[in-house]
Every structure is written in structure tokens, then in C-alpha cells.
Amino acid sequence: MPSFVALLRGVNVGKAKRVPMAELRTLLTGLGYTGVATLLNSGNAVFGAASGSPETHSAAITAAILSELGVEVPVVVKSATELAAIISENPLAKGAPDHSRLLVAFVQDTKALSSLAAIEALVKPPERFSVGKNAAYLLCTSGILESKAGEALRDR
Image 1: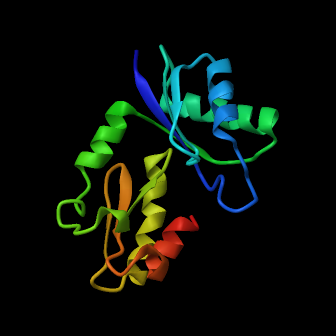
Image 2 (image 1 turned 90 degrees about the vertical axis):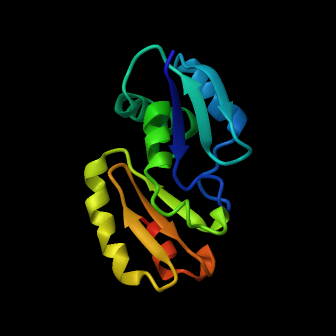
């Protein structure tokens, strides 16, 4: 059975957009997904599905979270194969001295990546930025909170 990861954008940060992980697991199981697991309070979940595309899973999960939990949140779903490609295509990971300063921007539709190219103008060396085929990557060597490019990437 194919595995997928669901990435909920901007949940459980502060008091807005709260999605308890137990409720997310129950919601995903109710949608028919199997082997549902969440990571801490991250808004990230892994699940199995016998059929369906990442796009159809994204739409179903987004709609269910809104109707059942009353939270409007973008949900990006990637297959295990897509996630492996995003990891292997990361041009910044090998030279990154501290991976906690590496951001990866996921998009549901790779056509949206072209809009992220504007972030390049905000990159201050020794920061590095790259838009790949499946994701965008930013290495904030001085720290994510200190980076204007990092702020712009988080706000998209």
C-alpha cells in the first residue's frame, strides 16, 4: 500500500489554527487511511492509502479539517516517492553544517515553485537558496529567525 505524508501549513503555532494530533489521527482514519501516525504537535502525518493521488488526498483532508474541526488550513500531501525525490534533489543539504537551519518549501502543485524565485533577491550571503523541480530550499546559516529570505519563505 502506498505511503503518503500530509503537511498542514501553519497549525499549532500560537493560539490560532489549533489541530490536536489525536483529532487529526481520528479524522484521517475516518477518511479511510491506514497506519496513521503524527509527529509531536507538528501538523504532519503519515498514512497509507490503497488508491488516490496526492492531490485528491490533499483536497479530501483539507475539506475534512474544515468541516469537522472548523479550521481552514492548506494541506500539502506528498507520496513517499515524491518525498524521497525532494530529499535527494536538495542541493544545499550536503554542504549544510547545521540542518536545523535548512528550510524546505513544499508545494502541492510544482507550478507554484516559479513564484518562489523572487525570494532570491532577499538572500544575504552566506545564505543559499535554490528552487528545484519539486521544492525550494533555503539554508539560513545565520539562523532562520534572522533571515529575511526565511521570513518571506515562511509567509508564502
